[in-house]
Amino acid sequence: MTAKNTELLECVVKAADDRLGKDIVALDMAGLTTLADYFVIVTANNERQVNAVADAVEEAVYKNDFDVKQVEGRQAGKWVLLDCHDVIVHIFQADERERYNLEKLWHEAPLLNLNDWLS
Image (tube, helix red, strand yellow):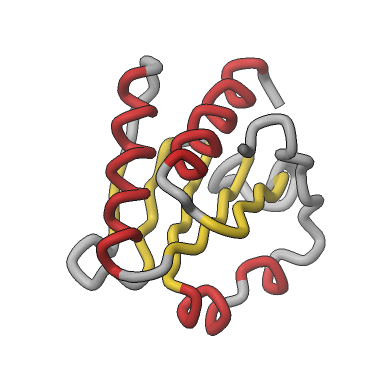
């Protein structure tokens, strides 16, 4: 975990929270996968909010001099994935989040305390 990765994580979490993303969690993926250091999982109420949260996160990432490598799922608006290199952001509608249940799938990944970054 580098300071730069923590800064990116904070940027992502705050942007999702600012757009009223719900039930925001971050999983510490270090040592579990080479995909990323962190997974951030966010719930949004509907397709419009899923895309609004994705837009806010993407904008904040670029504004803070980080990069988004790839975005998937914008068209369907049920699950948008933003690959920000060391932080992968999953923005779900509630039923999709429940269906895929990434927290259970990656149950061995420690949950991070985000209280200082959430309003």
